[in-house]
View 1 (cartoon, one colour):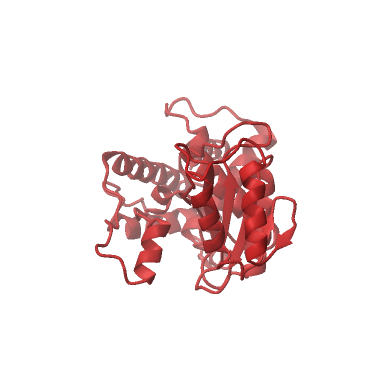
View 2 (cartoon, rainbow, N blue to C red):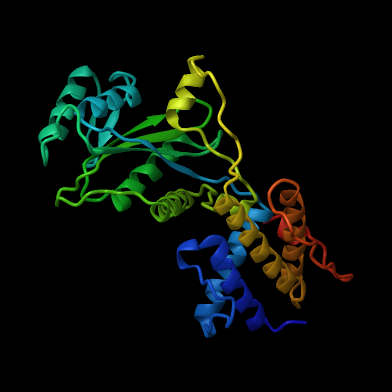
Length: 319
């Protein structure tokens, strides 16, 4: 049997690789030397995220940068698209709402002259288009509230507008944000920013009682290439001539999935050796999860050891 603090150390070390890639520790030894309440709390948080991923299969949020306008002409066109040419309500960073074609013209003028002048066509990206989405069945008003709170945190000091789309299968919010902030700093989203944005959006949904996670694809055993907005629109209009490659197959993507698989195996082995029935049940759930994912993405992962005396799984399955 493993001591509780040893198990917590493994969870913290390898859980960081799975769920907090920005804090990833490259060296595998020594394990993080956390003690007392802080270590127990961090390990408990990782257990919760593991259970959400492998047992409850909590819905995953989607946050995508779908493009951006190089000039006011492209930005205004996106305003028209997300608002259905002014028919849908637009909300700005001050919480003010507007509707109609005249409002779109006023909005475009405000962005054109509200800071550095934005010409009709620009050599640089003057705005970013972001889409925040949840699966079918999620309350659209909650998605809109969470997107609003997300924008207040992550897009502070920038002009932005947002529009809720609840007429399609999955409720989602389109946000257009001016690249230049009110203080002259420019937005330049990177991969680490996108992961943080997903975490923020998921956190706000949970505040409203909606189960939501922001786990990386590699952690979930997925390798899907999501289509850009132009491809989705072209498919809907029947204009798409060729489908995109559906799976990420680059060397980097494969290495990331392999790293996640090793982390799952280390965590599963540690939990399987625990005195706690809940930990051992969680290890069995990880085992099933890895086996299912391994058929397509998690290669080179061996089955975790089974214990003969394992408490019934009903407690963890009901959570």
